Image (cartoon, rainbow, N blue to C red; front, side, top):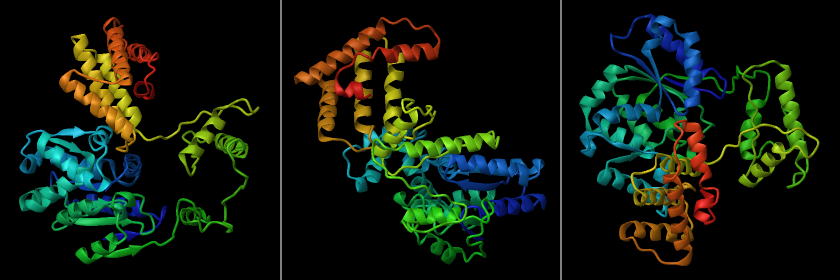
Length: 429
């Protein structure tokens, strides 16, 4: 089956009703489950909440809800040794992976990750679907095992699947029934290989029954919210008016964004007044620079407007790799020399990976010099020697710190040991 439709058209609801009907009819054998796959954990949580309503409690255990990555990893853990030769694979988290491919041209990064898998047995997230598809394509028996376990597979956001995910699905679809939910106009993951031809490939391969809900909208019926969102992505919204969509224009420049703060405060007041316990409010901006201006304005109370508590969504690599460094400092080492080397290694990871694999020539040169120091114990250059001295001082301070046993207190205290750092590499960390 192929179920088409825009946001709120009922694709997920229909799929869960279909699953509930199959479960109630007892069409599954003992040990078999219906598998529901989507991309985001937030979507998974929403589907699981809906499943509690749509599927009788006694059958809920027979619906397995997972991400594409989570599903691929589950059988890579069991069968990955067939292709890699490693009994156990070590995961390479995205921040660390970014550091390992720093300086490598974007088109060559998959090959670099495959090299790391072959030589070190470390697996990056970007290879999950590829390795899973290779396993399925090479082994008819493995395809049979998985299809016996999951005779019905529901694919959410199918239009966002990349080539490797499509290969995985095509292999499973030989014996499992596939129900795909897709919005042809929405490809959030186009940057990672989502292809507008994917729906056509699915139709050609499986000749499914097709149900198209078009622009039907059950979440915000009678409004133009969906149309406005689609137009906004292409710029077609300019000069148009929409039902139940209010557009307030103002002249934006760096120090005059108070109208945006007024709008946020008004929206927050409206949401609180409606007494919704779990409301959320999103502020979308067009650049990182604008994000900083808006965030500073919301955080300020100097304009006679109250401070607005908020979170800023930033690229995760830098903070994650900083946390690894702080964690190393918290853990300590048996000797001062060992701690210096471990801190140096984690600092190199931060420098290489904090911008998602993009790195300046200056940082790359410093990282290479620090790696050479770890091998030889020798380093040259005034600034580099100053950095080594600061890391040694940091290790000395940590060796002299007595842990309290309270992780929160100890984390903050070892973090404070870094406050005096002056070298750019440490201060940015």
